[in-house]
Image 1 (cartoon, one colour):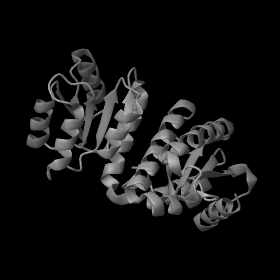
Image 2 (image 1 turned 60 degrees about the vertical axis):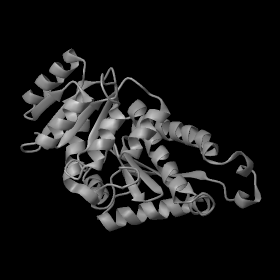
Image 3 (image 1 turned 135 degrees about the vertical axis):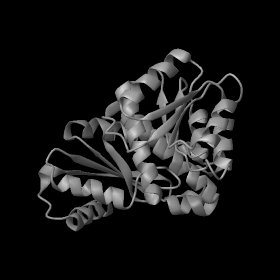
Length: 286
């Protein structure tokens, strides 16, 4: 069931898509408004505050990122979650969205059931506010604990843990802005990979600011791990200046991916503290 009285604004200049989404989500029980132009969307968001904005990246009047910037700049609309609807896959466009704290991306042609799940999750995360990481937008804190508690009652799960080693050294040399960019890009790559391999309902979040947790199915775990390691390791060099890749400043302390796996079938867990301790020990020993 949708969140009670949840409403959102669909900003889409393709009338067929806009009407289809409007009809579909109204049947789901949401209150829906549509806008075909960026300026129209800004006026609509100001006059009646939506709980979510679905924003097509290509608009006929103003750049969609400008729409997002103006929503973020206004106190009344700054906290509205934004889900970008796009035909593009370019990294630059996605990073622009992350800089504007976009909640999510969905690429056309999209699966309407996946979009429904992303809308639902975005609305729930928005009501839980600070339980998402401010840099990556991934869940953390009590929401991670809640998912791990669910694992105690389920035998069909597998957890993949990932850490960015030597992030502190990278931050010392390049600063916090570059470090945050690295975390955002890593989270975005994880999001893309999970979209290729996993179910939309698989869980992803933070164990700590530099550690990620993915809860998926045992049959997906191996392929997911291999793809993540390959993609992330190939990307790490991008964040160094050319002259620094083999410099003394990073010798023996280059960025690296550390992973660990935990399966429900390995052992029974009696409570949340035991499960969290096992996760922590697994990462220390990885």
